[in-house]
Amino acid sequence: MKKVIFLLLDGARVDILDKLLESNRLPVLKELIKNGTYKKAISVFPSTTGPAYLPFLMGTYPGKANMPGIRWLDKLSFADNPNSSNSHRSYVGYENKYFNNDIKKSIKSIFEHVPNSISIFNEITRGLKNGNDLTKYSKNYYKMLSHFYGSDLIDKVAFNKLIKSIDDEKQFYFSCFYSIDSLSHIEGSNTEKIKKLYEDFDLNLGVLIQNLKDKKYYDDTLIIVTSDHGHSDTYKHFDLATYFEKKNNNVFYYPLTYKKLYKKFNSSVMVSGNSMAHIYLSDNFDWSKQFDITKYELLINDLMSNEAVDILSCKNRKGEIVVISNSGKAIINDKESSIFYQPLEDDPFEYNIKEGLYSEQELLNLTFNSKYPDSIIQLLQIFKSNRCGDIVVSAKKGWDFRERFEIPEHKSSHGSLREEHMKVPIITNRKIKTNDAIRTVDLYPTVLAFIDKTLKFQTDGKKLDIY
Image (cartoon, rainbow, N blue to C red):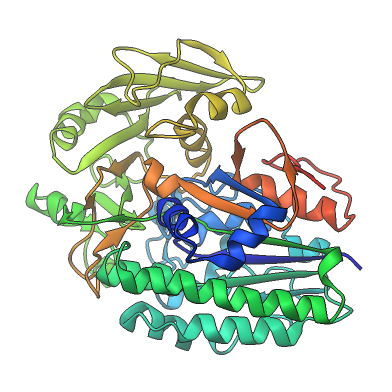
């Protein structure tokens, strides 16, 4: 029976991985690459844990799954009843229990296609058989240890459970390893302690591979090592909620959501990964009215004058996406069969591409090696969610958008459109044949094809040839 073992090294940086491989500090991964493949791929926006898992397990972009971030507001639901459990969300805390239910119902998880699956320290469990979520009751405890103290115990437990669970019946194993991400937030993402965690992963991977060989499973097993996002060190914080409060706005934001019991709001800030944020605006406290860009030109100009804001996007009256940076301004329009991109002034992403119609693959190939890889497609997909902000901002390198209530203080962040956050590694023990640039969303159809599961519907990714 063919098997897929999917190892998600949350928050792994491609540049650090490259240097450790070059200096022979990751011998198991290096041997894996020698007989298999090492490619760079593009994640999704927001490049943050949770939404960036959707490509792997649901085969879709966050916007299409109506999961535009780890925090969001639903304006129409909020207008109807601010106290509704569906009007806003933060998956950092007790509302994490709603994650599976909040994903668009029509999208099927990989667990629904492969019922004999195992999940370890993973929140997306829709369709998973009872008993196959091996950390259902312990994940909150180990994640708290990792989040607050940078404990690597969570990774040791994950490998132990994974190795013990491998048997004749299971086909798909999805295991998350959080210590690199957690410790990066606490102390920065390029320290020797962080690099030691990469080495620990490599050592444990060697134990796993030997176990597969001893049980005669290895030859029929596809091993995938990847990440959901990268990291970059954070030196300054621009707290967006404080910014709006100083403008005498009544701002709705986490964790002070209880204020809705006695107060009305005319704005909301929802931050993800800390380097991107959704900004929601009401028209004179009426949340049901559609956003009108012409009423907020002063606000947009003021935001763009701030040192922390890199890319700002919103929709105009025609429904086109307007992208603004200090480098220029452009329009993105989805024409269904192709995507229209039009720089109005200089290109906001500093792309070397002309105005015109492009396919998704063409845009990925053309922008893959830029500072903002695949940003045209990523902005298109996130604005497909009715929970998306009226204005979406992406932070400059070294900055993020949340300071108060972030415990511990973030010394490294992610979530933005920048290459440092969007580009991730994909390492497999088998060859991947493609001349095109790839996205993480391509792994979903690839995994299902490898274990001979026929997809009867179209996903956002393309199947990669494995041999």
